[in-house]
Length: 377
Image 1 (cartoon, rainbow, N blue to C red):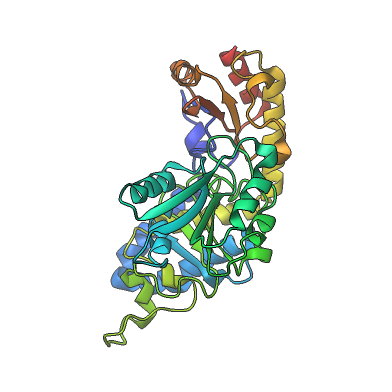
Image 2: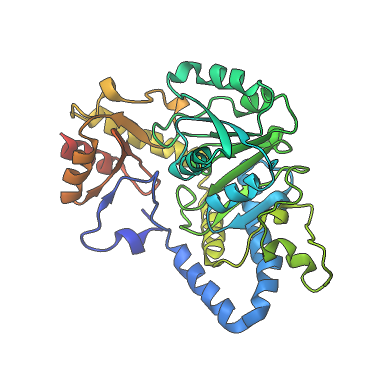
């Protein structure tokens, strides 16, 4: 597809059908990578003034536009979402075990951290099963109404199934205690599904990144920080005090906007790539809605052409595309073997346990879907 010649223009390029895991970078990101280097070389220490005055505000405005956020300044950037999780945890009460409500299908970074906190008694975690999907919204909302919960953490789209929470605003409204922190993990939702957080922007944290559907690669993760929550994270770095850096004094100062959740020095090259890709998408009129429509068409072509017993309606985890993110998941004991066999044919898919995951992107065509279907059969 136009815009990806550097990735797919070479001989022997693989058929990459793991767009839920890693996207190839559009060609415009190459020039952005170079621009970051040139700015660092030419501006030296003054590059930080430029980053905070120009690069970050542009990236914030892109995210606010894509998510329907009323104020771009609520966005903080970091090298990964786990650093934001730790910063959020540092805002919660200390001196007792944290009470956490989540699901049994959160990504490994959060799941591992919670398991470790449980080991030493620092957290008491309640996990609501995501399946059966038809009743998830009701079951999780009922649990969220319970008093005494410090943190509610839930994915917008679950990484192991593709199931998308049908009503995020309704789930948030179920949390009655205003002191409870609500965090939505949007890594499989951002730039994959149309998302408008306007109705809940003052109540929820939303974290995601550019590694997947935003096509900007590693290192450009972000956190939307609702006003009034987490005013003074105990886990804090010098970026959080950048605006007061030259003021001196012994007090630990925080801004009231999203910068209060910033950490310390990180490579800002990914921000350049992110802005370049967002500008390119806008120039090409590649909205989230029409990118999703393109992917749905490719998915339907693949499903129509597939003759594999391992990839069929019988083991399709979320068949209704109105309830699904932007990848297909199939339950099969041969998931790992299928990934290995396809790799030998220069086709890249992946799996999580017994869930085979297949994801198409805007750079795929119907012939790619048919090639994959033939290889699976």
